[in-house]
Length: 366
Image (cartoon, rainbow, N blue to C red; front, side, top):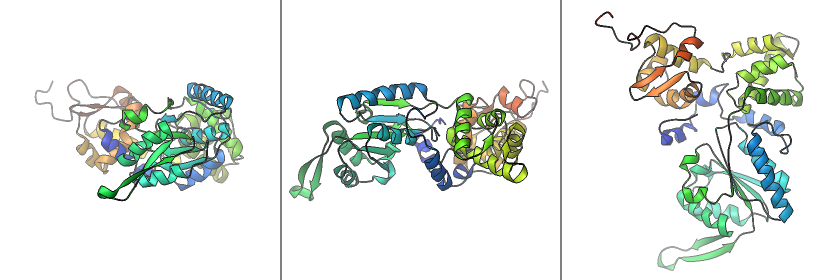
């Protein structure tokens, strides 16, 4: 199992931690407890099993092979991209390929330099440290990480005030794998210390079909090519979502059919869960319908649009809009949100004539 863009990176960063619609959506890219448990069973164990991200796999394979040939630890690796594309999976593969243990933590868990020092000082030689959401690490810990990555050394401050003493602590060589959904938030000094940087792209439908077939085999689910294609086409280019949809379709097939998944069964199951042929769910369609039906396609302000769909402003902006923008169904303009011709076509609506799409009365009748 392998695995959107806002105008304000600060609010976008905060949106990763929304509790509610963002995490409850079937097509959401945030992994809940069930997802994490299933992902552990479905994760590929080496680069040969990993599907998609061809360029990243090829480049990473060269980095790891060269490190093994030299008998050295691999360069530090930075993986960026949207949630659910396989950053954690690749970090585990790096450790497996290097024959090294892996330690997993996250930026929000490291709030003080002492937290990072405790982790670093307990690493074994060659160990892989996976730091998820690295852009959310505290600034003091971030500055300590500079020296640890470059010189394999940290200075631990003992005491306070004039009597404080810096004790140098040597570290064994290790490989840091950082993962981020917001590479632009990383300061240049930190980015520059990574020897290899890779950006994870969204998956093509054909790649997701392979992901679905592989996961179905591991889950002992019978699925044909058309059924896999139907699920892949509604998965928003994200393997995590594809696997989640597969599990829900499996449930439907077991209860409503003979357990075999084909195109008809997959389509019927995902209709029950309100995921349409393009991967839009109830919230996405509610935003589009309000924009097109109530406001004639816009432009309309974000707050007004949020009130129209009965959601918080942040939920509309950070949960629904990124995918709609990426799909070319909605545009953000200085005057407000605007529906595109593709949005009108997707909902089967006829756009208003030119000059009548502002949501306001045409005073001149033209």
